[in-house]
Amino acid sequence: MPTPRPFPDAAAVARAAAEVIVDAVTRRPDAVLCLAAGSTPTAAYQMLRGHAAAFAAARVVQLDEWGGLPAIHPSTCDAYLRQHVLAPLNIPDDRYTRFHADSTNPHADAARVRRALDRLGGIDLCVLGLGLNGHLGFNEPHDHLLPHAHVAALTPTTLAHPMVATIPTKPTHGLTLGMREILASRRILLLVTGAAKQPGLERLLEPRVDTHFPASLLWLHGNVTLFVDEAALTSSP
Ligand code: GLP
Image (cartoon, rainbow, N blue to C red; front, side, top):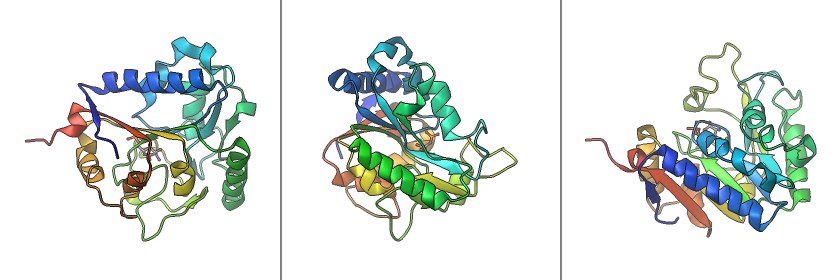
């Protein structure tokens, strides 16, 4: 794990993160970008709009999805990525690999994503947020973690995430890339902002790998960039 690079606020983190993402597609125009949904990366994604031309060959892979929601539900990670990334950057479906939230056979859907990611040759840049309970994607704290794309049981903490906390139809499961697929990324960009993430960030910075805090597996990766804001870094008095 690198020493976290601190920024004064979330907007500064977003600017730096957008630079890293643009740099990835500038170096390799057909880069495979794995993108998290959630509140943390939204501002960074919005800052990509001025650089749409750089994404003319970029490929996007969805990190995770809320399973059991209707396909067109506005709370899906798919809807989020379409709104914040795919539409503004003109990335068509044939350069986009995703889970199907409404699949009646989610295990087969996860296996399909695993094969598709293999065909893409893995991830060049993986943009991650930190779950309050230490999850990455929907790799939830557990006695063991799974290497490949899979169907995940969601914890109560995760089901309280703002994307789904107030919707009447709750997700029944998560669909997520597995830890090996994440850790095989050539570069990982982890963004941690806001006071609510302070305990998680503090735990993450302890050099101790534990499947009950999945983000700690990032200690096993040699090319993680960790951008944080002051609120996440500083213990409240
Ligand atoms: C969610 C998603 C993750 C996301 C994380 C943090 O549950 N499964 O992909 O990165 O939790 O979300 P946020 O950035 O909204 O705090």
